Length: 191
Image 1 (cartoon, helix red, strand yellow):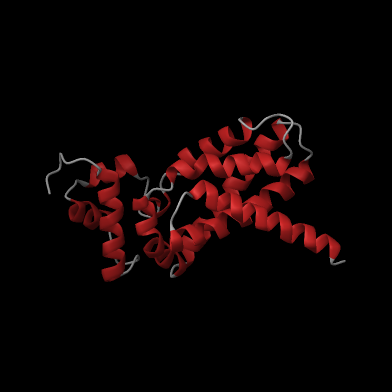
Image 2 (cartoon, rainbow, N blue to C red):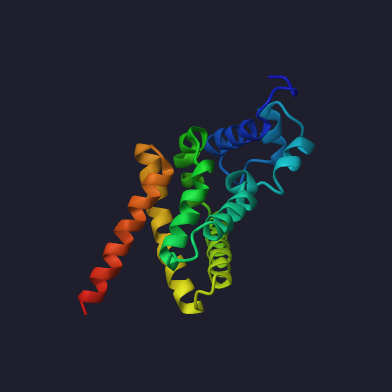
């Protein structure tokens, strides 16, 4: 494969996942990933800060989309509707390539303490920016925190379902958030 060929980022992700499958995350070097992808190590670092980021790349884009999704929701909408706007906004990043790599990516993360910690930090970062976006809309702090946590639960549920069945991620996320709303309301009645 020539170095000039397009989709360097996707090639690096596929190469990394292949190598992680073959020899484990810990035993794989960035230089090996770049070589497998037919690229240079410097090209790798133009796309990813470090080895972990090949599994978590694109976070900046997701943050921008989450904030834009909340900001783009009508002012009259409640906090959960704004969180729904954020989940729908990130749907553009849920491609078939991402779906195809998803189970392998999750398996690598699950097998490594450092990567599980990085995944938790990533989700905490998403929560933080969404809470701040809600507070900028005038949502009280506790309301923003609860709405975002419910949204994160819905995101995790939606991601798992989307990996299994595919489809339009926006619709999968909407359904998951609707179910979370129902469960939250039922918990209130169970007391």
